[in-house]
Structures are given as structure tokens and as C-alpha cells.
Amino acid sequence: MELRQVALEVARILQDAGKHALNDQMNPRDLKSFEMTDNHLSFTSDIDKRLAQFISNRITYVDVFDGFWQFRPEECHPGERYWCVGGIDGAINFVRSMPEWTITVSLFEFNDQCSAQPILSVVHAPALGLTYLALGDKREKIMPSTTPSLDYAVVSFGMSHVPEESKRALEVVSRISGRPADIKRVGPSSLDLCKVADGTYDAYFEAHLHKWDVPAVSAGAVVVWEAQGHLSRWNGDLVHW
Image (cartoon, rainbow, N blue to C red):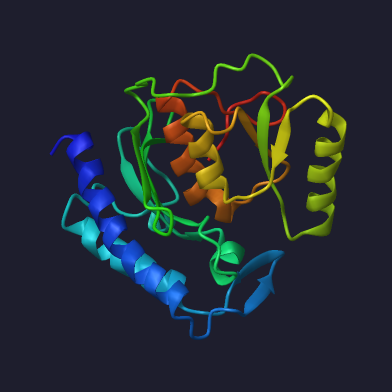
């Protein structure tokens, strides 16, 4: 099966999963509790686990490739492909009954240098009725921003529940204030990246990302690349997934 057909099948899986998640948001049970583990804020609800199981099980009927990202072996080889299934990106928005949250899937491939790169992604926002699907190697320009600088741009940024990380994000906002026409804080990162790709935002930044952000950010990254956008770390280097 060609990768684009695989992506379409995965998009249908996420749309089905999204109906279940949206039903949970609209009919909340025990969704409003969080716990902090190693500076990571997460649901005490099992919704992420149920979503991941549903999505992963359905993907095995499409093409399992070499398995799943979290179960990949310590030593991987060029050409191997692993699915990276995310939970709810934008958990605070989800429990606060806001529509800006997503579920994501990306497919990583190890290149000739044995570096893992996301090559396919689907980002689905059930409450917004939006689905972004991308193959990074196609680089098909859609409708990204053509604003050449921060001046008069619309910029989005990500926040963190870790105080030092939030402080750094707000310091960046303070330094660039007065140049963009507007600076938005809505989230989540996967959706903000997609909105850079489709031209809603001119740019997006987040001061700190962590290993648990890999599913969401990798999925959004492929959408940005397909729109001929650019993604880098603060020092200009490529992201090391």
C-alpha cells in the first residue's frame, strides 16, 4: 500500500477515535484531575490509554511496518519504520471543554545515517472538525504564510506548567512584543504547527519541549514541511527526535 493511501486509512482511524474522545469531553466522568510525575502533567483518567490502544490496534490492520515507537529496539537500522501514536494533545483544553485539542499519529523512518525522521503524519482535531494529513517528502505547498518577518505578523506560542519554562516563554513574548500584530496563546503544539502550515499563523515557538511531546510535535512538523515551512531548535539545529 502506498504511503498516501496508508495516511488516508490512518486519518479515518483517528476520525473514529476522535468521536469517542469527543463524547468523553461532552459527557465528562472523571476527566478533571491531573497528576504531576517528573514535571509531566498528565491525566489521571485512562482516556489516553484507551485512545492509544484503539488507534494502535486499528493501525496493525493497515500496515504495522516495524512496530511502534515506544517499543522500538535500542538499536535500529536504516529503512525501519515505527508508528508514533499520541494521546490527547491539549489536555487542559480538553478538560476545560475548549475545542482546541488533537489526537495525532506520525510514522518515523530511520534514514541512512540511522537518524529517525517523521515521514507521515495525521493531526485530527475532533471538536473543530479538522484533519491535517501530510507526507513530508512530497513538500506540496498549500497555503502557508508569506510574511517575511515578525513585523505585523501573527505569532503563536506554547506554554508549560513548569514555572521556569513558562517564565522563559513569557520572556520571549516580552522581547518580541511591539513587532507582531498579535501574539496568540491557544495550543496545542500539534495544532499550532498545522496552523502555521495553513497560514493561520505566521510563526510558532515553544521555549521547552520534552520526550512526551514527540508524538504531537513530530506530527505537526510533517505538516509544516509539506507546506515548505521550516522547523528548528533555538540554536538553528534540526530537531533530534
